[in-house]
Length: 251
Image 1: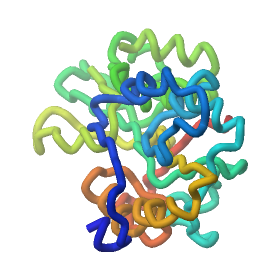
Image 2: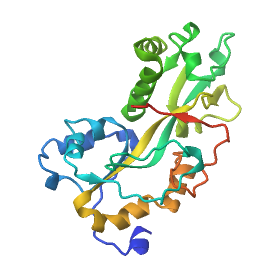
Image 3: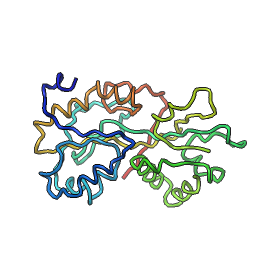
Image 4: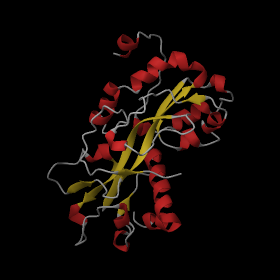
């Protein structure tokens, strides 16, 4: 479909399942010392790889990347007014991974189902929350946001709360309907980990058709409807309730 839509052939790609994480990218970059040796396009969730100045972040500081996604100042209704564009125009954000709760209602022991991140800060949830430590992209987003909202004490409380699992929205759909596990979209917003796209500025003309493809409505609908990763494309219906809010660190 990509070749038919863009007319491009001979595009070399290396795609990995999200469960693999980004360590394989970091490993491949260990020997990269100049921008010329970098791949032309990256796309992944997570902060660590792209912002760490010892990793790809150092090339951002050199002005290697450019935001080539152009929605012509239109916004997806879910993200309207949230300004998710990179103000320095280095990175593009095409979608997000929301973190929600999956609650084992059989183990509540007379406690009310937690409906917000603020609820998880309460003492009754100590030793009761499982964090996605294997998913560093989302794990880092959660820690950054909790620290931003509740400071060091919030991180300590969450650490003491290890019945409830915090996980990507996608995986809550694997819970058996009518079972004891209940998915909860936090009332104070699902913490999100952005899915970034980085394109080399010097290859902008050649990369534009590829960027346009991944930033298109069709790919946005695939990400949103099949992957349950809400899309930033202005014409994509993310099929979430009107009161489904999200939150991210202000830094």
